[in-house]
Structure formats: structure tokens, C-alpha cells
Image 1 (cartoon, helix red, strand yellow):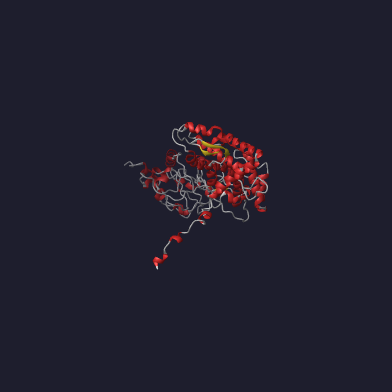
Image 2: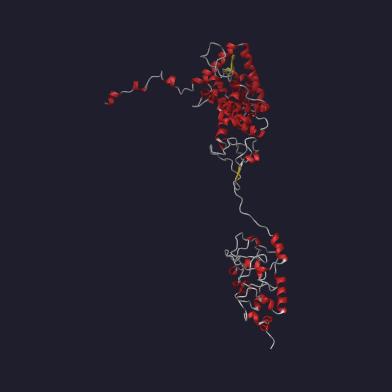
Length: 506
């Protein structure tokens, strides 16, 4: 009777494959070499046809227990990934590095194993690894997942690697661990880090505008390191304690310059104003800030100087905008602005008539009293005279007299009056169409108006210094009289106790 299958025929021809006469103690014994030639040819054809070169997995980095380096591990095929119950760590040492363990060949496979499996692609290793789970939808097949220690050529699986397998092993990508946070904090004192390298970057946290530093004085601490936000600017509270101290002092000095000297400097002069403020701040803070001072005075450190100078520079527009916002509310009440008042507004703006005292609505204006309009003193009072740490209390030396011998009669600076008058002009102009339309209070548009007011004040001070003194002192008294919380006035008022009849309560 003819055999029912090729497998049965091979089994009858090669009983050795059923485990007969197999010496388990002989490590050099290779049963496949004793298989019939027909069997070996069939095995090689199956190996060639069943190998899927499109599926390559990345090996583990763990070293196998037999001592062979993990870098020699080859990738498993898709079959081994799909049937994990019989899978262990894959390991493919270079021939000659390790001897075949006798435990790998406890029993030779049957012929059906060689014909119906693709384990010539799956190389069994001795090492241990985590057992992967079956992909969803895959069914485990005992026939395909049965382990075998033989290849089609009769050589143990872990002793053979084909050229195709070697090529795939070289081409397969290897991946490192997840990137860690990169923190760039230190630099050499000689040169300053540029914007890109000075920031603190943490992957996965890109939109963080507030990167906080804890100023420490330990070894390696650099007070000059700058922390940029995502817009490439410096947030004041994100810098070192020394940079913050210099910047705050520079902001105050910039305010003084804008309020008393020139509220609308040109772009080039504006950058110089803030840089000078930073330099003077570092000088006044003492020797501890010498490194910051050196960088601010070094013409080659353009990046550092610009970055630090941008902090007080940004406060200039903020100060002018705040003054204009406060002036907007006062102008409506003091000048009687309302709907359909375009003719009245045009008359107010003509020749800056709004600076004169009087009732402008009734056209009763006193042209002998410029800058005595109550709106001017009211805005100055709210902006500079109110609050615990107001500008007047912080800088009393700026409110000095211009007339010798009249030290007890302080004046408001002429630049302060010019800036407030410019803001009032902008607020009135918003009603020029007969209804209120808010406009930007930018320097490019209102710098001309500011220069006109500054020129008029300087002219009066030069021609009539005493009149100028009386006017500026009048504004100071009007602004200061209402900022004492009424303490001086209340002391002269009758006390409510004088009206109480406490005898009836006895």
C-alpha cells in the first residue's frame, strides 16, 4: 500500500527522525545530516518559500544567559510574533561564539514538523523574555508554533544566519530610549548664550511661558543666564534674582526718564534710554552685580543687552496707555463730552484750548491761566499721587522748585504735565465724530502733540520763570490736597461725640 502522505513515507525511510539511536550526550551529533537527500531538498525549498522578509522586529537589549552579546540577536518573523505561547527570547550568535547546548536537542522532530512549520526562520534562544500576547484576531496554531532546533541545511538554528537574514538585521532600525528633558543653564562668563540655547526646554511642555528659577549661590550658579519664553522674550519673574533686581530698578529709572525728560523718544534714543537705565541700575546695586554690569557695558553682547533692555522698554507703552485710560474718564466729566458734540470738540482741540481754566461748555475760559484746568490736576493726582507707594513718595526729589529760595513750594515736573495734557488731547479727540470711538495711544501718532506741550512749557519757563513756578506749584497743591485721605480736613471738623447724649444711656 502506498503511503498516505509524504510525511509518512519519510518517517518510514528515516526512522532516525523518530528519535531512534539518538545520542543526547553527543553535542556534535546532527540528525539532519543523516536525513535522506530528498528530505533535505524539500526542507530547503520550504525554507526559501516561507521566509517573509517584510517582517523584522527590533531585538531586546538584554544579554542572553549563554553570554553571547545582545547585539548579535536577530529579529523574529511575523510568525513568532503571532504565536507567543511557545516563544522565548530570540538569539542568534555568530558561529563559533557558543557551543550548542545539549538541552536544545532533547528530542529530534518528526518529519511532519519539518514539512509543516517555518521554524527554520524562528531561532530559539536560551535566554528569557516577557511572553508577548497574540495580536487580536490571530489564532494559535500548534503546528506552526511547535519549537524545532533544526534548520533546512541540517545545522542547528542558532548556528546559521543566511545572507538575507544578515541583510535584514543590518537594515532593521534600532530605537533608543525616550528623550529626556534638556536643561541648558550653564555657560562660560566670557560669552553669553544666544536666545535658542539660553532657554530651558522640556520636551512635551513647549507652551510654558513661566519658567521659574530659584536663585541659589552654589557652585556653578550663573546669575547672567536668561530664560526666554516661547515668544523669544524675557518674563521678569522667570529670571534669576539678580536679573530681576536689575530689571526692576531699570524700570523705575525708565519711568523717571519718560515722565520728566521725554515721554516719546525716537526708536534709537529709546533703546539707549533703557540700556542706560539698566547700566545705572547694575552700578547702584553694588559689586555683586558686576558680571551683569560687564555684559551690559560690552558692545559685543548685543543679545544680552537687548534682551534685558526689552523688559523696561515694554513698560513705556504700558505707562502711557494707563495714563490715557485714566484721563478718558476725567475728560467726560470735566469737559462735558456727550453725543453730537463734534463742533465743541473741534473748538477744544483748536490751539490746545483745553489746557486753560474755566467752563468750556459755557465758553467761559480764562486764557490767563494755562494748565490750570481741573482735569489736568485730577489726572496727575490719580496717576502719580495715589497709592501707598506712589510716584511722589518714591521720588520726592523730582518735585522740587525751580525758583531759588522757595524750597517749601514744590512743583510738578514740566514733562509730567506735557504727558498728561497729551493724554487729555487724545481722549477729547476720540469724540471728534460726535460719538466716542476709542483709538490707540501710540507714540508715533501723539509724539507731535507731546512736543507742542513741552515746547510751550519750556517757553513759559524761560520767559516767565515766576509765573511758571506758580502754575506748577498750583498743580502740585491741587493734586496733593486730596491724597491725604482727608486727615487734615477731618481734624478741623466737629466730632460726633459732641452731638451724643450719653447721659440718657446711664
